[in-house]
Image (cartoon, protein in one colour):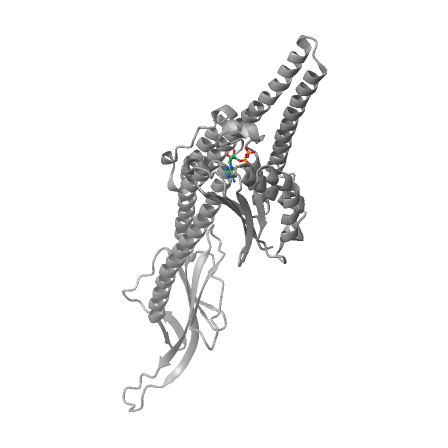
Length: 469
Ligand code: ADP
């Protein structure tokens, strides 16, 4: 009952019903008016003709005999002012017409419908006429003088049965034609609404057929009318995104398992070696040392994965606050100082001392550590890492410029992908797992900011932007 098809049909039929009723009513009223107008003019003519036949002589009113013959389907009655009957039609037999007097001043006649002794009402005209007796003194030079005058009421009536019957037929016709139109339009509307809504069924079917393993299915837009194109296009775009998200998810899970499998097998292998035979204390220390390092590596991967999945799941809420960027950078430099010294890389802070930013401090610090750690790791001996910032209208940009090995063009678009490493064998040595930059990107996006990179043989420049709050 609550279906769109039902609602469409209901509204359509309601509007159609109103149109049909109004149309039928107007048709009926117009026809009734025209029929009564014809009858009234017929009655009026007859009454006037009858009035012309009336004469008075010696105070006696009588009907002149002439060519005029009174219609057989009408009645007439002539009465005087006192209501005395002067003459009536034979068609009236024992009946009398009810006396209705026209308004004395304004009207000469009045037409109205009155109930009668017949099944159908009568249409009655009452005409007022004053008849005068003329002097027949032929010698008199004076204009003829009225000797005697009388006010007469000439009434003519006709049954309305013909009109009633015609109107009844018209009502029947309007009803049946209206009913047929209503039914045909209803059926047609039902069919058309079904057809118009068919694409929704087809789209629903396509979406129903989708499953995790079958996400490549798309809606064939060309099959639908133009109105459905935006819906189908949007659904296809959503499917595209969903498919990509599923692919990423699968890739991520498989990469994560792969990344964890390598260090785990190193640990398992070490323990097996240890258990094979009696080992010297030095060998024990060496193997435990290796296991510890590998465990740290796994811990690093798992922490990275956790951070990313939390960001993806929207579980991380940013507690932003105003902090001094120069001071934060000095803190990060302090954390990385020993690594920089090992790599013989100098760290240069060119940020203006009073630069302040609004960020979630711990997260943003992680961004800087990841970027600077990479800038040191992939640098050359006696190289440098310079950080600088610039205030802009829309926010602030921070550049991390290194004099390192650079990143080749074909890798530049991929380095922010999860687990992507330019040189996996080198990363293994450096302990990198390819999650650092994707974490940076996610945190920057969480802040409403972004990250980009340019690189050549002389080094790389990572630029992060933070919007104004
Ligand atoms: P990793 O933990 O392996 O360093 P990242 O996501 O931080 O992973 O970096 C991805 C890859 O990008 C690295 O494997 C490295 O090859 C490259 N890379 C990142 N930063 C730099 C840099 N400053 N100079 C050169 N290569 C870099």
